[in-house]
Length: 392
Image (cartoon, rainbow, N blue to C red; front, side, top):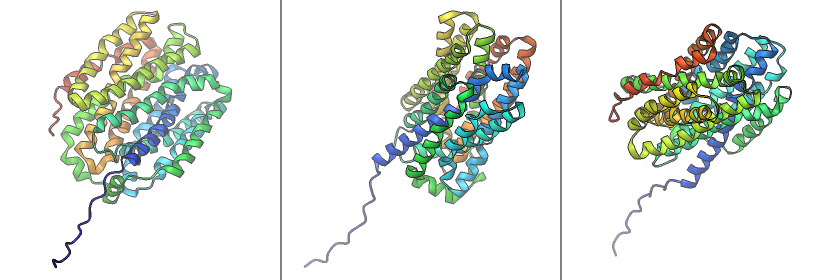
């Protein structure tokens, strides 16, 4: 008789159902996290009137949110890569929801600043770890699946102004309820992906980032350019439509919803196109394609202007999942840190610098003129995008 052959272990097949469940859970949470991100923008016209704020002060308040929610993301990205605790994701919706939804209870300007900073901390802690885990179990089409995660957040941004305007400033505290419920759901269901746990055990690796600093710098700069326009418009569209175009507070908030909802659709479409045609081509098209629509928005009125605003948002936000996936592919062992650079630090530095600048310019030259000047930045992004090396 022949000796029995040794049985070799068969690698377990990827659990596709677990991958889809993880993506759906994190996309659902992302919707509510970014819903809170746009709460301040929805209340800006009311807060300016209630506390007699100048546009510079309004810009500084928006800048404080950007600092806390975006600029601080690399800190949370490094900590999540190093510690590997799922609490960075689990607690975020409750923290963001409680403090952002409490803006209507603020007794004064500096209390507003404190609430915005604390709410922004919850927003910041969620993004690096969640974006690193959202597609970690997927075996292909990462741009497409990342687009699902990113677009869910952008739709949350879009729905936020309508949601908080519907609640009203006096009942804004009720907006914390979804965040508390999402935190409870994450506590029960969310687990770090195996790839993310492995990355966390390797901790922060500066050498890996330095090895790819040139292509990372190009992607970072492109995100920065897009973020200037995106964040300035998100911060000031309600004020601009209300003050300079005569829209009611509710109508102005719906204008922001239109802009961001179109951007959510744009991110979803951009991720799908990147898997088919390549990220570089999508970024080039985005930077060039948004320019004529931005110009049309400022040069027309009525439904034509609003349609142009929606088309500009769609084209501009094509690139959010594309930049993120390209960055993660460059340094996969540092996915949380790269995500925080692309989603947080670039957005944060752009918003922290340009939102107060635009607010100050608006006090002198008018808000429409200040926003129109910023809308030319994607032209620089177009020429920079031509230098992307997809083989880096």
